[in-house]
Image (cartoon, rainbow, N blue to C red; front, side, top):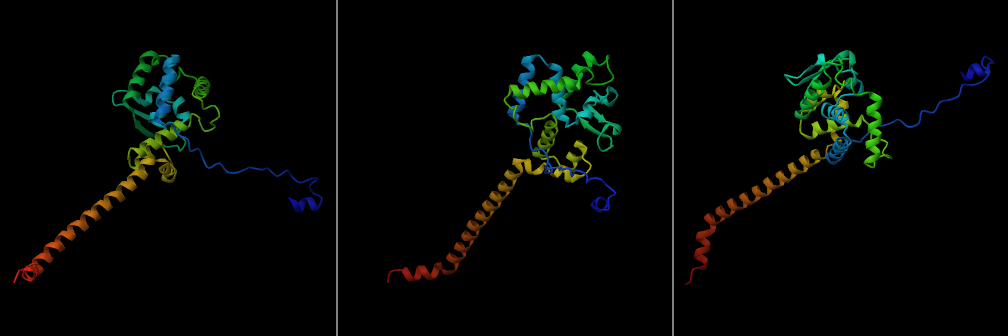
Length: 239
């Protein structure tokens, strides 16, 4: 382009776009206390349907589009399974998850109230409506200035909690629908219990080493007494 400009083929150089620093991704996830406060806010406001979608995001780790396009034909209330169809997932692959106990109760409630009215599980909750309530609860709990306090962090929370519970990372990858295990591994350093496991392992090793030293000392003491005890007894015996 610079050469074309010098040769007169371009009247001016195009404006160079600045992309800024690359976003390294959100680190935010929901704490247990924050979850309880949000559930309480939904309950006190009478937003039962919003609460149901909130629990769904949190316990399945579903993406926004997966939640709002989920149909009853992909839900089995008897086996407690939810199937995210490949034509609606980010990586194009179908995956299946199981309902938590509270999620199963929510699905049964939703089905009894709205199951016959819409083919979509959350057809009674608009995307815009939930987003508005999210902003309300965010401000009500004092997180208005937290730019990472977004709906998608519920997906991060689900993944982090699964890893914290010790679920195999490949199973977590399948549950979340990650295309590469490296994506799942990003969440590993957000799991404090992993560090606890490491220090526990070190403490156990130290305890075993200390016990081994004491045991070895006892063995040497017995050998020493067995070998030199008679001689020592003779030397200290009165004449």
